[in-house]
Image (cartoon, rainbow, N blue to C red; front, side):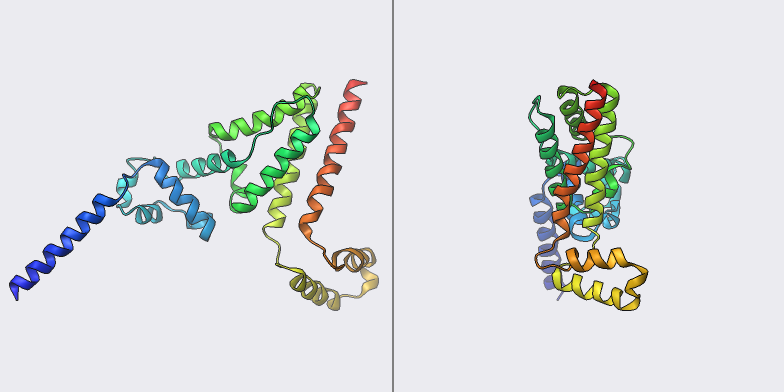
Amino acid sequence: MRTAIAKKGTRHVARRSAEAASRAPVSKDRALEHAVAVADAEGIEAVTMRRLARELGVEAASLYHHVSGKDEILDGLVDIVSAEIELPSPSDEWRPAIRQRAHSTRAVLRRHPWAVALMASRTTPGPATLRLLEAGIRCFRAGGFPVQPAAHAISAVDSYVHGFVLQEVNLPFRDEAELAAMTGAIMDQFPAEDFPFLFELTVEHVLQPGYSYGNEFDVGLEVVLDGVATRLERAES
């Protein structure tokens, strides 16, 4: 029996050794790769040093040899997301370039819905984050905006895009049927005469076939860009 137990223990140790040998070395890049996967699947709250260590197959203390702590992980996550956003090509035509940047930003943030609330909170941005901001400012400056109007413009556009996505990823319905059920329940609780314009908009726009909240993005973006263009005209006059 002792021989059998010894052989079983030897096989167990050998299997663990083989598994350890087959694992890729722990690194900051691998930790961030797992952090993105965890955040996408379970939300940013699930990203902890203990969880990442478990995903990497090491003790939590070992992970601190590669990253200083959770703050470095969060900074890295923001930079990974920023790097996925396609940068506009240098051009004198600021409007299509900014439109492209806005659409790419929205697409990436929809893929990583946890990121939109995280991006503005970090105090140590990485190179990809700075390149994204640099590209946006360059679009306006190359398009003829003086420094101050360019600052106002990039702030307005990014605030719109991030704010829209924040609402979009937190909508309490997934399709037209759920939207109709939700709005119907709300409207049944309140008299229409108390909220005439809200009810009118809901019936004549939101509850129409084919409605999608996402379709509001392009309309709102053009409103913002029209306002930005007006500011440029005033600056030039």
